[in-house]
Length: 592
Ligand code: S6P
Image (cartoon, rainbow, N blue to C red):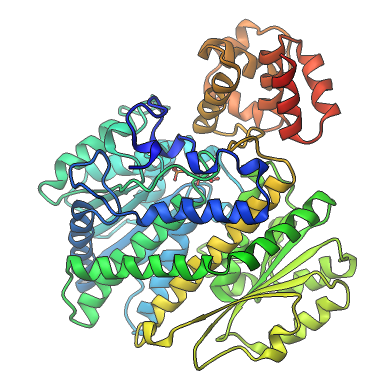
């Protein structure tokens, strides 16, 4: 049993908000140590349940596998009536991005078979949120319901996947509530990584229920196969609460498994069985092993990315096809996770919006955040690129290798700091002449026998492998830059109610203050006042998060105030003297 599984471990927190004992000292680790800790943390996803009666059900538990089988059969049924049916995947932040990735990839499969493309995705904040952080719409249950209602209009059967890793997003709660009130049309599936009794109970804006009540009702309905809850425990995140990591990976592989089994039942007449689902999950476990077997090279990339960020340089991902999308997603998540500037880590995909297949089409006129093609990179970034900047190519043997080599040569004129993550197959390898263009080539050669007649699996595995590598690179680089304290990201932007609660929890933990003291200090820091006014105290969390969105170092400032008993102005000047958050916090905790 893992330490975090014991009932006394951080008992007031759901699994997805607990800190992971594996990474307690990740802020003091070197790149090799960081990668090893991430490897262990990710491995928890595949951990077997030793006793079926243990407190938490895991991905491999019989009950979870059975739920997956039941859902796959629903997928098969939906595919039988494509005219009247829809499969909708929805979520906020990373969960919405994974929803998008899955919907587009399964639609592509259907298109290749000349079948109706019956998948749709919803992301809180719309398509802009695919590339930038839009955390506020997460708090709006009515908006979620409205968007779902719109997508499904005229459909007779909808299989709805509401993804919220923490079983917490009001946006998703609103959608599930709509489904539960219209069960003749909807079959809702709640996807997340906490047990139902740990789902959020906080009241939501203009909403008659809470997340836990909805999850409980769905569990109840599962007995009649009218609703499903797919919620194995995969352990706390490596960086506390950062569900872009394990949460995103587990959502991706779990839903891919469920959908693939449903498709194969429909089109290949392969029966949906527990063994079949288990075998697909075990293949992903193999992907984990193979990816992290390259941990030395991965650590070298983490080291280089850390040097670039510390030296005020940048990290650029230049990807092809969906590997490009994985790069863009990883880069965009650094802004809310680490308070990074948008230029720090950026992703580009070969042909930009024309190969993304998002619903709202080309968003490039929306501003620089949406310049995402290789052409944009060449035009806007390349001229000022230097050795201080790191460039990582993301491609496979199936991409246009002439294109790869031309761009690599072009980039190589301006920086020698050029690297690659390459996927190929035994018997079909990327030539050495191409690999030789990169200072580091992290090359994974996969066994072709794994993918006979299942090329979709190959893409899914290469995406996941790339996600693990990039998550390690961007997380590791920010750790090396000093953005993380122990395994907490203290300097987070408090842009929605989940993050507001998390911030208060961290302040309590690190300063031993009460909840009220912590909230008071947080509000003083958010509103930049030495004393709270009546107006501030009576405002709601939405107002607090809207104000916090405009401010820097809100949580570190509150932490210094609480720990040393100093004023807001003194806390600010202390932080100004210590630009590295980890050092500022450590100095302040030592001081008191
Ligand atoms: C987490 C990421 C967030 C979450 C979002 C949804 O690393 O930055 O954007 O994905 O808050 O969380 P959840 O628990 O509803 O999937």
